[in-house]
Structures are given as C-alpha cells and as structure tokens.
Amino acid sequence: MTTRHRAGLCAAVTLALALTGCGGSDDDPKPVFPTLKASSPAASASADPDAAEKRAVLASYAAMSREQMKAYRKADAKGTDLEKYATTEALGQIRNDLANMKAAGTVVRGELGHDAEVTELDMEAQTPTATLSDCVDLSAYETYDVKAKKVIPLPTEQPLRYVMTATAQRWDGRWMVTDINTQGGTEC
Image (cartoon, rainbow, N blue to C red; front, side):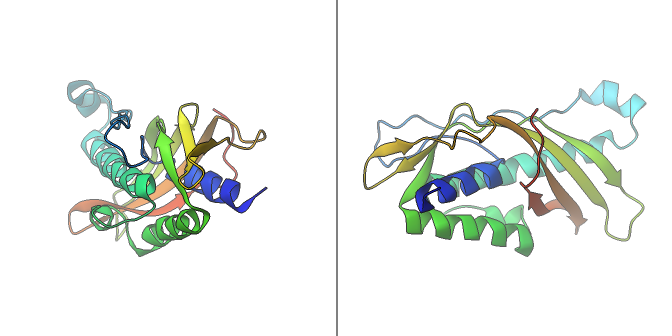
C-alpha cells in the first residue's frame, strides 16, 4: 500500500467522524452532515432516564466529526473548533492523520456517513464516561491527490461500512471526545 493510500485510509478510518467534499474551488460540493441517532425526547425521557445525557454525548460527537471533516478537507486544523469537542489524546490522533495527509498531498472529498449510538453511559463515575459505537459509511468518501488532481481509490480490502468506537467524558458540564478507536471494527 502506498503512502498516499495509507494517509487516505487512515483519514477515512479515523474520520469516521464526519462528512464531505474538498479540493479548493468554488465548484466543489458543499458538505452534507448526516444526523446521528437520537430518539425523540418524549419517548426517551420516560423509557431511559439518561436519554438527555446520551443526546448530549451524540451532539458533541457529531460536532467534533464536523470539525474533523473541515480539517480533513484541507489537511489542516486551522480554522476549526476541534478543541471544543476533543481532548488532547483524540486531537493527537486527528493531528497525526492531518500530518500524514499533508505529507502525502491528500485531502478528503465526498461524504462520510455516521450512524452512532451511545452503548454505555456511566454517570456515577467521578468523571462521567460514555462509549459510542458508530457504523461508518465510506461509500461516498474519497481521498483526493491534490497535486495529481485525481481520486485515490480505497484499498479493495477496505470494507465500505464498518464499526468504530469512541469514548467521551463529561468535563465541566460538557461532553468531550477523549478517544477514537478505528481499529478492528467489524462490518455493519
């Protein structure tokens, strides 16, 4: 696998967190941000006492994903609000991807779909913690070689839909993504 493929795949897998097009011209498609699973407030409140916290976790995850895709579209975190939604460890993962993308001369285009849900929530912990499971869809995702002005196809062994996980913690009343685990996800 070439460095460009690794950088693009790494971004695809890590990104699992959000969403659309790049390239640099005004003709590029505008990003489309899919919604993440969240049940209706009325139904969830009576059935699940943690429904509001779960919605807050998903909202923070979705916001981080949008900011992550903004960075991936230009292989640069400048002008994003990643620090509002991701902690040092998660930011380090994203910055590593961005450095690999920049070195390979690639950016992200297309769409990255998400279907996330909170699978665990511990509000009793000293620092409340949530685990998320996200079915990431790469079917409309592209790694784009800026210099060659062409799309780099995903490796044939890369599943188009796979499960990734993330962890979030509640800090000072808001949820922050602390870890993104893109490895070992099964197809979904």
